[in-house]
Length: 383
Image (cartoon, rainbow, N blue to C red; front, side, top):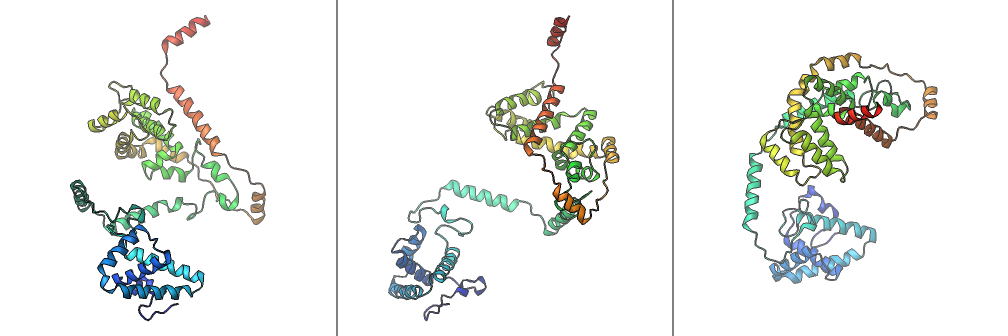
C-alpha cells in the first residue's frame, strides 16, 4: 500500500463501498501521471479529457503536475507486479467514473463506439425524433409485476423438475452414472412406443410436442383425421427452408409458394392478408427467414386451437395408455464396474441425420401426387 500526503491513492479507494466522489482535480492528476508514463501517447478519449482539464484547471496546473510527478516517482519504487495491478485498478476506476466524452457510461457504450471528441458534430433532427419515439414506446411498454414473474418461474420449475435428469432420477437408470444406455434406447428420435415421461412432456406446450419427432408424428396422425394437416406441413417446410442449405433455398421457396401460398394452391393455408402480402413479396428475394411472419402466425393458430384439441383427442389418450413405464435399475457395485468396461459408443449424430433424411425422402415420395399418364405408359410397356 502507498500513502500520499496530498491524496491517498490506496487500493481501498477503488472500492465502491468507499463512495469516493471522483473530482476533476483527482482525474487531472491521474491523466498527468499517465501522460508522464506514456510520454504523451494517451488514448484519444484520454487526450480529449486532458486538453479539457488543462484549460479548465489552468490556474492550478502546476500543482497538478507536481502531484502527478510525485506519485509517478513513488510508483516506480514498488515491485513490478504490484505496480501493474495498481495501475489496472486505477485505470478501471477512472474509466467507470469518468467515461469518454459524449457517452453516458463506459459500461454501456464501450470505448470502441466513441466518436471524435474534438469535433463539434451537430446531432441531426432525425436522431432526436428516433430517440423520442424510442422513449415513448419504452414508457408505453407493458410492465410485468415481479410477483407474476416469480409465479411463472415457480410454475416452470414445478413443471420441468421431474424431467431434468440432474434433479430427478432417470428411468430406468441414469446413463451418466451407470453406463447403461437403456435410457437412450427408450428415448430415441423414432420409436414406436415412447415412455410415459416423454408423452407427458408433449402436453407442456406445442413447442415441446413439435421438438420431439415422435410427438410430431403423433400430432400428424391427429391432424390427418381432422383434415387440417396443411398448417403443420407449412411449419415444417418453413423450418427446412430456415435450416437447409443455401443452394436449395430458391427452389424450396418456390415449392412452398406453389404448395401453400399461391391462389388455388393444393394445401393453401389460411393466414391474414397483411401477413400473406408481406410473405409473398419477400419470396421475390428469398432468404432463410422470409417465412418467419407466416410461420409464427400458423404456429399461434395451432397453439390456440389444434394443440388443445389434440390433448383431448383419442389419439393422445391412446398413446398415453400404450406408453412404457420402465422399472428402475438397481445395479450393484460389481455390475456398475462391468457396465463401465462394456461401454458402447453412442450413435454418431451424422448417422442420425442421414436416417432422418432417408425417412423424410420416403415420406415425401409416398405423399407425392401420382402421375396417371406415366403410370399408364409403364403398364402398357409391360403388356
